[in-house]
Length: 307
Image (tube, rainbow, N blue to C red; front, side):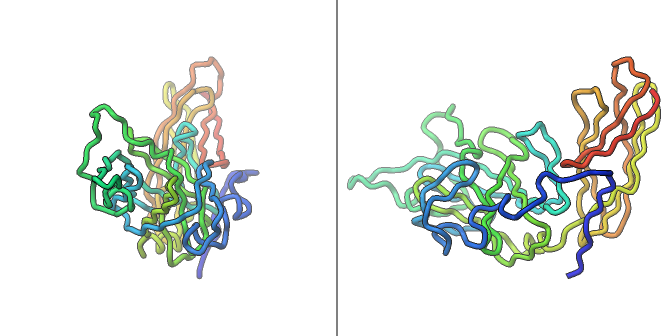
């Protein structure tokens, strides 16, 4: 397999997330509980769930209902970089990482008790269904918080448990990312929900997802220039893609001394170079010079110009 290493042109730049595989996984080399993996409790998202007693397999875009919670995984894709909603939208990136990003929607559904005292099959046996048609008793009831669910990603028999939110869209609607190594070529995998009653729900990934995981974009920052300006500092950066497929370059740009910056995002075709132009604000701190920071992950590039 022809793979070219990622080139970062920041002197002394390093990645805090680069390191051993165990930093990303729980029980590496095994499947999830109940599917050939361990039978003791499994920790995901900082919570411990009980051993799996039942596995429900479904597909991306289909809802699964467990104990009155209907959850649907959609819009799964593989990104070279992403953002962290729990870190003010900071760009998450590392030379040896890529991110499986997916959207999760949750809602409450009612369970029906029969005369024999058991609940209806559609709710308690964790069946999958295209959508839920049952509304909660109270119109003001908030949907379950997706970040409270114990989520993971299984790829080729390895379970990745470092799952973090990338964007909170509204109540019951959150996008998540799972960092995985770039040098993997899985043929099987699924987004996994470990429900508290011992049920494991698996949303199977497709061949398209495995192809994206196998062929990663590799970005090179060819140039980063900042020019003086009275109120805005013109910024120009040139990025090339030396990887295995097209991808989207993602970084944050801000001026030192300003509280907020700009998120830069643009597509870079395979084996091509793209020049992107924007501007950065001049800080009102009275200094004669201004420093503009371009950052993704732990990689930071600085350019200082006269004001």
